[in-house]
Structure formats: structure tokens, C-alpha cells
Length: 135
Figure 1 (tube, helix red, strand yellow):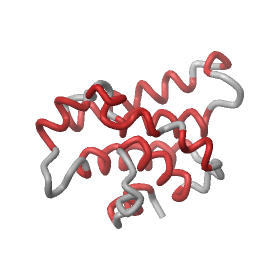
Figure 2: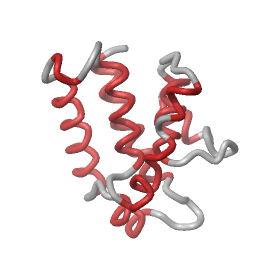
Figure 3: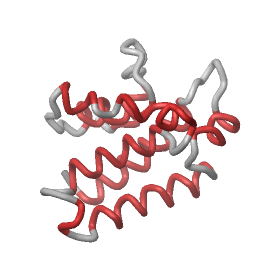
Figure 4: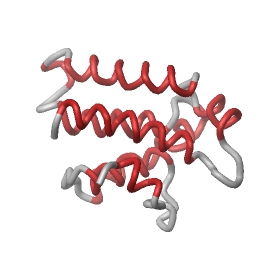
């Protein structure tokens, strides 16, 4: 199952996960990443644009997933992670017009849908990249 499909079915809602957590916890399940609960917990502080409406938690969560998938030891081993994260951020920004939580919430969030349109778009972009790059 793709991450977007999993999230669209409500994954993370009952657990009350934030945007970054939904991306990481959901990707763990959808892509069978085998992350420990302790590792996934690292995403907690990235929701709500790191709590200050900065870079969207769905973006930072996706970057965490890309890092787990495509970095062997650290980011300086190759340019690959920078290229992938640059591609993800550019695609997200092209689709939604912003990467900051404050602007995204103003345009896309309401009490009915919450941040789902934002999270689903991030998941769609991530799914496409993972499908292309492979697990």
C-alpha cells in the first residue's frame, strides 16, 4: 500500500499524530522501514513547523524518510540526499505554493479537513519518488 492511500484511510488519526509523525510512522508501515518506536519518536518535535509554523512537518517528515532510505552513514557521503530533498521540496512548493506551515495552514487547513490536503500531497510526492528510486 502506498503512503498516501494509508493516510487517506485515516492512519495516524486515532493516535493523534502530527504531520511529521504521520509521514514517518505511516512510511514505516507503508514502506516496511522497520524503524523502532524510539526512532520514529524523533519526528514528534517537527509538527506545526517545529512548533513555530516554520517548515511544514509533512516536509520535514518526508525528508526524514528520504534520509533513512537513501543515506548509508551520513549526508556527506554523496550528493544524492541533497538532490532528493531538493526535488521533494521543489515539487511540494510547486504543488502547494509554500513550504512554511503558517502559509500552508492559511490556504489549505480548516477544522473539517485539518492539514490532510497538505499531508496527502506530501505523501503523494514521496510515494512517486520512492517508487522511482526503489526501496
